[in-house]
Image (cartoon, rainbow, N blue to C red; front, side, top):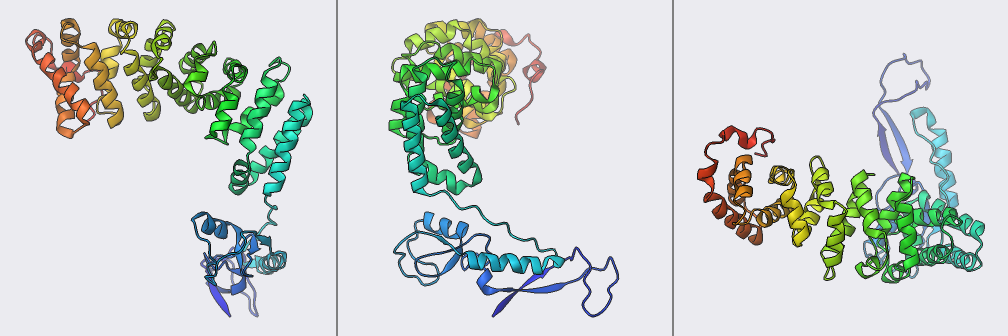
Length: 433
């Protein structure tokens, strides 16, 4: 039994008993044997594997079937005694021969698939990595880490297998061991481990505990202050996984985070750094962190970043600014910065509901009833109209309360702002509606 497969356009001229003129389009019915098709997708198999029931499937299809929670054979409906997938080399070679035979119709030969990494290979390599790290064998450790990274590049299936079988914890332990020495001496192996750990996120609690040591975090900070952009980004992404309690114990963390946000190394690293800062300023022990961040000029940095930032960066930057305004020093710095009102008001209704809620909260803190000068300036920039629209569009209850209170305070100062040309409201701003 065969199923038909249609090629709408033939890329090469075919001669079957008679000459055909070049440039003519052919409609060819090519019969593909049923046993070349995966029973799940009905597509031609690229990596046929046989399950315990004796039925052959394409590896990618049956893996997705099992990962979806199914424990039965799609064809026989019987329970699978084992999830082991045995490569069916005979069928694969037959498919490849068939593709070569029909290459004149534009059919490409399927490549010979690489054998996926097995849980045993991953576990064995992890054991060797730990052994090499404990013996201080940097070269051997680098070789093994690169082996794991090569497996991960081959397929998503390999990445899942590597993560599930504890590679992240083994690499975290190795990183912690090498970070105790001179970083400059072990920079190669530490860099390799850092690059591998970034695609194994989120880390387990055990992994976070191991990497939460002073030496490990200090090593990440060292990389963040370096010159290699990729390594700096990897260090920022990994630092984001650390607990607040571990971060506050290490010197130089806040300085490195602010520096990376200021330099705008990349979107991913900016988001990671801002997320880490948000955790620090939103924790129960945020007092000293907020003070130090304000001293480092983070308020000005955030306002400059928000001006033309993408959605994710803008939301996180406004969230951090809102938290900094809870401190006396942060609020004072925000009030004294000429960019605060124009930038924050400009972002109202323009980015997302979350960014608008943060913007309203910042304005509510900066423009209190006693700050008449700030209220008049906000009116001149056009905040009154935007807040009215925000209430009409709808927002969270907390944001609504702050917006209503702001409008009441602003309404009392409207008479003092009448002399200003109303067109100034949006003169330098892009209308969001």
